[in-house]
Amino acid sequence: MTGSSGTPGDGDLVDDRYDRDGKLVVPDHVADAVRTLIEWAGDDPAREGLRDTPKRVARAWKEYCSGYADDPSVHLSRTFEEVGGYDEIVLLRDIPFQSHCEHHMAPITGKASIAYLPRDRVVGISKLARVLNGYARRLQVQERLTAEVARCIWDNLHPHGVAVVIDAQHGCMTGRGVRTPGVGMVTSRLLGCFLDDERSRKEVLSLMGY
Image 1 (spheres, rainbow, N blue to C red):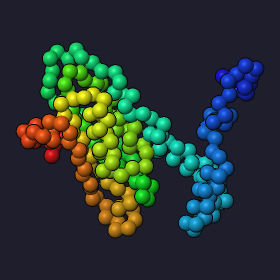
Image 2: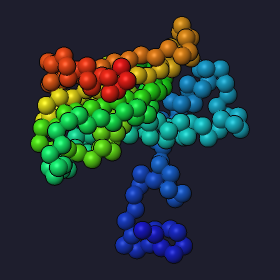
Image 3: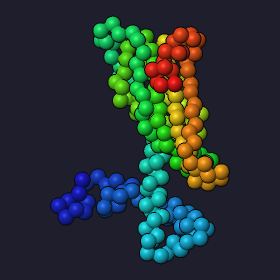
């Protein structure tokens, strides 16, 4: 809280992580690192258009990587048992997400389909998207992201089966290196009955559109 003038008053709690405008404070060494990268890339970090870029980039990366401050399993802590006897597949399909490759810090953009076969309880469907974003908002590789989402649901909901399929495009391929836009990478992780039972596996993948 602040006084009527907008400045901290007696007894006010001050969060020194933010400046007077409510923006995240960027340490000098972080801003300097971005300036160094701009200069190394061939531009002048002192010119007007780039003068505030180091702090903008730093704040953006703090947001891109907000998943490090998130425990995705927390989103699965509240479950519901009153489901009217429903015991079939629960599927959330084509959830959009964005992450960043840990090798080049380039964007990974795509969609995920997440399914589970409940044993005796279900979770609010938005929580599946929150689990995905909790892991996606970190430096990642797609294979690990797929496995982490599946394992989190498996360990916390204890369902009969879990299936996660991710289809994404990688900026490290489209904007650099081989520069091949439009190429998608598909990864999957199946656990429980979706791994062990062929009929269940075919059913869930068909519902996902694969």
